[in-house]
Length: 480
Image 1: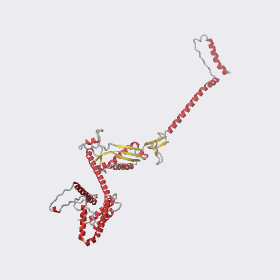
Image 2: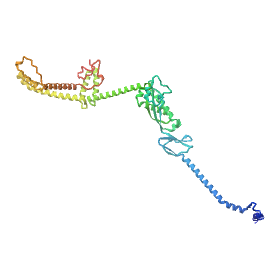
Image 3: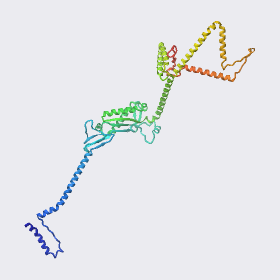
């Protein structure tokens, strides 16, 4: 009750002052003083509880949101370690810059891979296949880039030498100079060795340097003519030397291919060299054409199996040259028998068939004549003169019966006179046709007896007899 009285006393005093100064309250300000007791503080706390609850809930919500944000950042940080490696790309895993992984498993295959996020872990990747070009290291300098190479060749001066440092070139085995441009393709087969030895940013520089070194070493074994004429061999040798050098360095690089894009002699001699190469190509073409013609003639002479006959003939010539008479006679018989084999064709087969046909015809004709003579033998023994006269008249009759023969009857009284008789045009034409047919027949018979092919220039002998396939062997190759 005392506390209650104490709490009410200031209010009563204020009320009294308010009453006493009621008349002057317009010009004065009011002052409110509240005295608090224990019960009043509880009331204040009860009045402040909703605000505190709202503030606490707001703080708790903010804390929850902060927790979610931190968790999201942590998850994002962890997920950032996943990395996708596309096809054609290779690399290794590194933790704080050091390659990690079991021996043989350090290389990252294409696909999605989980790993520590940056900066703890990182994937060091690079293209697995790469290429470089060497354009200027061995190529002559041209002030005007738009000038064609042929124009530069025409304007080249022999008195203007190649200047080291300005014009690129390489020395060949015969001391000449050559120019070339080339490209190379290579693959990273061991990224661990490549990264630990040189680093990804120095790969092209290393391969370019090794390529130039290999070019110098390779062309030192080729002459200028060989380098310009052999299209593939120099590039293969350059690739082999490149690979040997890279293997010695152990940088995990495999050379795929080396291609020589351009090659030429020095511009001052390029025109003359091109003319020489043109002549050589023409000579090769003519030589190949001659070989084809020779092969065609040999096939036409003895068929596709002419090599067997050719080998026997060469053996016969060697035996004949050595003076072995018995050996040469044996070989000539072997050649004759081999020409009659069924696998021999061409002109030789035709000649042999024709000879056999003529032989058969001649044998048949001789047999007929023999039988005829045997039938006339008895008549000849009885009256030889009459048989001879009869045969003579028969021969005259056969001669007169020919269509190109004209018969004139002249009285015996004109025997002392010379009579010139001109044949009719029809008879003259018949005789000309008969003469032409006879000449054609002779020519065909001569041609059938002579060979229509040659075996080589060694048949032409200047100081001794040439080749002659005769069974007697008394004349011919090696005989005096």
